[in-house]
Length: 331
Image (cartoon, rainbow, N blue to C red; front, side):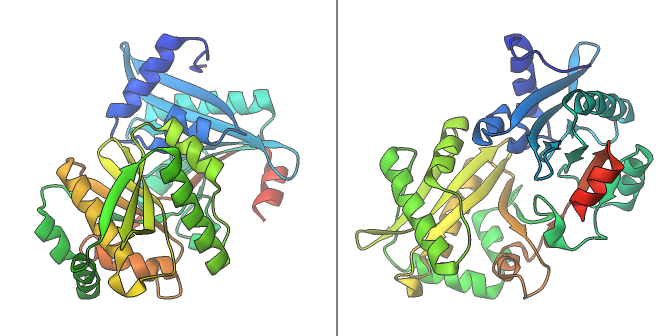
């Protein structure tokens, strides 16, 4: 088994270094994510070929409502989908680890584009593939995201790629004296968390609490909160998480004031320009749970990715150890 000993600092550093340069890596597979999800148990696996790291996976486990543990490799593994040998080794290790902790299934959901050949590949490896056959709300993480391509583009080219309404809203915001400030300090976190709470109450949806955001900022030192202010009042904000060559618009909130000045859209544009200046090649606006107007997130985000379209991933790949427990859990 290629599981890393938690006391082996050198191996852990090699894991971290591999993730920082792998095109298959996301922050969900970073060891920092286990600090955010601090009620889950963590295990890390690393794969080498001729003393070079070629694959890795973070496996977090927790007990399900049925009292049995399951393993979730969120947005993992970090393995080239064309490297069949490493995939086989990884699945053998995760099966053995699942048996060791008595988990009834292991879930993967890598950020790989939906593709019938990949579906067949993973099916042949013995995985249950939950993909386009299921409604978008059926997945642990969104299967479809709005990902803006920044590579090789100017700010003007990106702006002109938005639909006309989004361009108009951004330009309205730019006409007003909206100020921006970034921070990771207690005061900035408190203001942002209060915005989240206000929006949660206003819209009747459950949101993350301040302690969660604090863990996230602590676990990922490059993450930060940006607040937009107008006439001396902070009116909207966003928590950004850069990783690899992608900037993720992870959480956002706004107060129900000064709505006509389009501050949230102006803030988003400010952050896109910032990501472009810092040479990120992608800007992830997050997931959608429908591909029509019935999904408010889709209705809002689609205008920013008019050229790229919504990015749809393969979905979930489940390694099942107990058919009975799995069938009951999924149903």
